[in-house]
Image 1 (cartoon, rainbow, N blue to C red):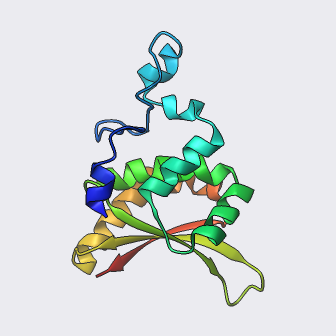
Image 2: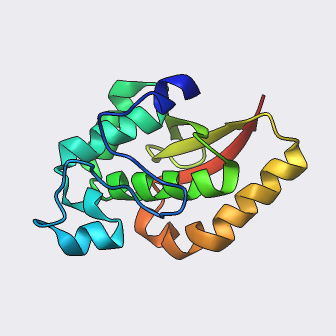
Length: 155
């Protein structure tokens, strides 16, 4: 999986020094503000953003996850931003699965679970997730409503 992602060279690129994605095809002349801020990806169409999400995350049930996210367009930008932060906290090309799940206590309550697959010890993985929470997620969790959760999964 990591090889597939790291071999991805013709699409959007991300640098660990940045906190967001940018499109290498954008010219600095046409969108200088976006280019300078490192947020040129925000100018992509929803389809281009979704394609980036599909390349970065492993979709467990692609159809249901795709439908869920497309019905909640705000999740697309959030997932792109989150991956950049997960990169900073968990290292290069973290493997993150997205799966649509349901809450057994609340009928018809569905949410997207982002499982960070790791071979780290449980203590180290939890420490990194806490770093992710403190440095970024807690400031952005309101944008997700109750539609997205991040959890480590140990392998």
